[in-house]
Length: 386
Image 1 (cartoon, rainbow, N blue to C red):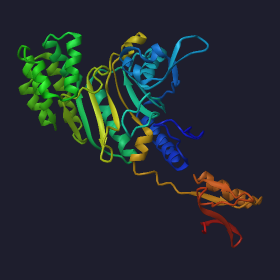
Image 2: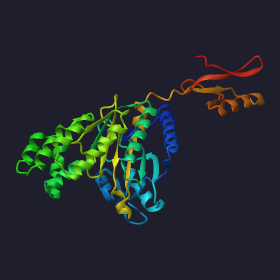
Image 3: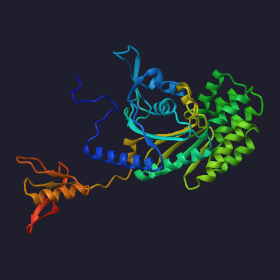
Image 4: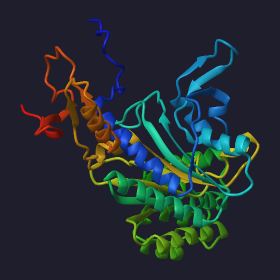
């Protein structure tokens, strides 16, 4: 049976007026908040040449993108599946600033497959990125901004899981693993497959073996970081990662941080701290972020970088709503007094629509909950009668 012409592909959806109004309101609120924190808005194109979108660690997105041939150049192009590589290209190649650069963005991305059973294949991605500072202070700033973003939406974070890819890489180097073996170990840890981890490390020398076996059990509040100092090998890479995590725990005590030292989400992409934020009503992470210092190398400039992104549509649905009133219906009248009244209402932020003749539907269905009426010789706002 043929699908009707109005049917959309799976995991794509129209955004109807009430929801769209809430999403747009939240977009403005968040971009204004980013601006107040020094993050400047950039708007990359939704389509680029494929080799640009998969440059550096962005190559992990290769299987997530829709690809096609450009009819002008003959080169392969793609719809972006993530905006961060594009913003990194802008920082590295177009702006080319020497100091700290703060950038933000908001726009649609498209995925070949949804990232979860409830996700859209066309998220409206919003995010903030900080370039040019390799210290933990930048990570603290970004995490605070993320928490503020969720609070402004009404979807306050219930948990922010934090990990550090440096721990795994330090232990893999200590074990002398080649690239293939490191990838296999990564898969085992991502699956939290402890029996397979025991088998994999059975012939491995100490202390790398005991350190890797300890990772799956190192999760919880900040106390787990102190325990990690006792059970993980005494090597520089491990010390540096734990020091950064402990600094976060001290500086961000007001946030609901938890630590999972075996979580390697974004392993091929991130170079240091990684985090995922959760809200009470969502079973999956609503925001992802972390440090990714190597992405800009493909554009000729590997700058320190950290940031986060999330789906604005999902965030608006999880939030408490924008609480905006309905529109005001104004009669069809050419009087100067009514025109002045309507202008004053619109200047105050009210939506006013004119009552056109011959309307047979419900004005409430059109979004109105009040109307302008003439009372005692003056135009005023009254409730819309059913």
